Length: 259
Image (cartoon, rainbow, N blue to C red; front, side, top):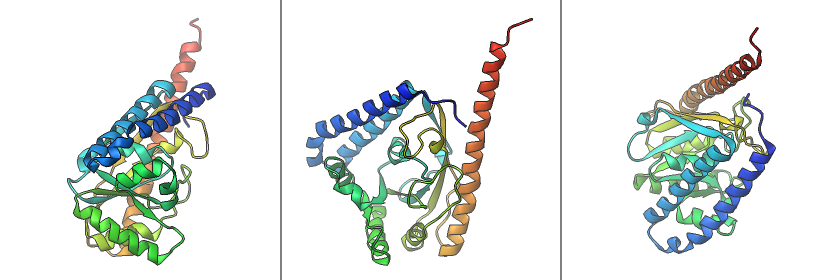
């Protein structure tokens, strides 16, 4: 597990993070009248400044792997979802992405306005097949524009190490869109736990895996996706644990007085 979190640093980061978000959204209101590409610059700047703030205040860095596996142009990005971290951090590496997100987030003042300008894809998770149909139609439009569509296959944040619970939405999009799906594994939940104010020091590991070419059926695709994401995610979590053990061991050795 990650090193012990500092409550003071965590609280300081949260205060700065949310204050920065609100201030930047207010300052950027005039950008809502400009083309979306201009707005994308604002979102990417916010993502990178937030990653910088997390590193400086909490000592939490990020290591990106396999970025060369991201194809140019349109594709589906199926990302593990352990934390709020990936909801903004992927903007730092993806060119003009759009996220599939629950529609309630679009109702938040300021935040929802900027999300609408960013061209995100809201979904009513209670509407069943009707929601899938609307999501697919909207996704096709965004893919035709050459955008990358980010979707969380399990639909919501899951604890690190939790049993996988993949939803049919990602397979529905994959089959009907006719584009490749790029799995992305990560271990962000170890450092930015869900439903917690604590932020742990260490390195968030994010790995882009081999794309899954279009043409598979729903069941075969979901199996391939899970077979790619789950072992890779478990491997990244084990790597962080080993790094932490190594750091703790080194610290203990330095504390032992020489005879």
